[in-house]
Image 1 (cartoon, rainbow, N blue to C red):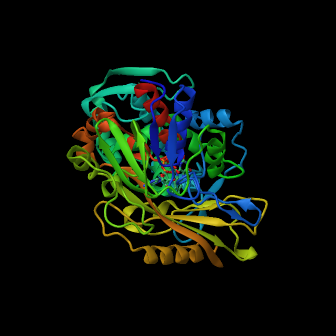
Image 2: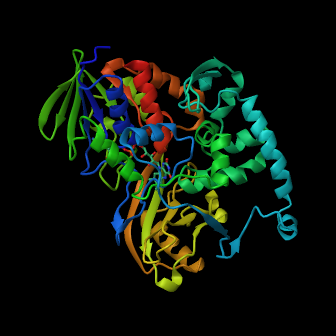
Image 3: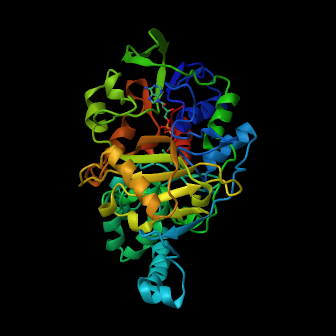
Length: 462
Ligand SMILES: Cc1cc2nc3c(=O)[nH]c(=O)nc-3n(C[C@H](O)[C@H](O)[C@H](O)COP(=O)(O)OP(=O)(O)OC[C@H]3O[C@@H](n4cnc5c(N)ncnc54)[C@H](O)[C@@H]3O)c2cc1C
């Protein structure tokens, strides 16, 4: 492709900014990033409080975050944040250790010993029967193929046939049962459901395992995690500062029109002309959003094939509250409440996160899901109240809520569409209409998978 082509990138989150970085590294310098907000980072949002930054969005990474590491190297920064640690509580607020191999615990939870065996089996199955399961993106999976870049420092491109991969389209719960390892869900649930990615009876195994491949899941278990002192938003602020063309903030895109091999974007009332566009903002959003953000169907000259596919996308509703406590009520550490990570406890508090261990006049954040495929959505205010009530039960009541948001989170498709080849159909459209699709839906809703997908997109098409 001609290195001088004019490329528009929509969205200044991890996907859009890293697309800019990888394009620039490949010699494409004629790009423009449009961000609708007055800040970059998207769902990496780290506001300030009392001299420090807390996390309203992304919190952590793992050592296999190679694309994030690319960004760190590009900017000369590193993951220098507070060390994470956590404990567990039951839904009555008692501190527990569900995985302790004490006699009492084993008698209470006889599945504990079996779980260890199933974990070993699962690791072996993923390596053998499901070879190729952990590549970034979903190309070929529904057809029993793998095609992508390995999650290794070298990120070699690998391709092959493996009909067993078709199993990945089924919900993770069914996938585990099929393979005789249902108990591993008790481990995977911690960094999955409580992180807002939905429930195992509704979400295809492909999403669960591409994000939480065996190694990554073990990193969560061992708390081998990265954080950033200035917050995850800092990574993307830094990247933005180091790009030749930082994002144009406050860009309200009124219209995107593709005709005669050109892309016309109307931004803040002015038409700008491009040759290609990379779309990292939401492709589709069902219904009305509280924050007014819209899917591309509302402002693009959307084509029938785009509409047919993108209208299949669903989202989680993931709610975060930031609160202060009285000193005596401040939690001594972060807590996971496993009992509340099941659909029957929709809308309840699943995790609360203490980021700064050396300071108690800092912010604590709470996390709750309020949507499940087969259940009525819990209204926002009701969920908020449930979480505040749960905090009292946990004996860490909130004194004051200082920030909150409800995130349309983790775009995904359900098993039926996954199995019908949704991803291969969208991948086949890459470049058609001079448009490339990136961002969370194309791989997975975390910082690294989105940035990695942008890397691959640039690698494959530019
Ligand atoms: C509470 C929470 C916790 C999380 N925890 C983690 C974690 O611990 N680790 C992790 O790796 N990830 C985590 N994530 C997920 C991670 O933040 C996202 O997956 C990642 O930010 C996705 O990057 P993106 O660029 O695809 O999308 P986004 O971050 O959503 O960025 C999209 C950008 O596009 C902009 N935009 C939207 N519409 C338009 C438009 N019309 N015109 C111009 N711009 C537009 C948006 O304003 C936004 O800046 C978490 C997210 C949340 C909300």
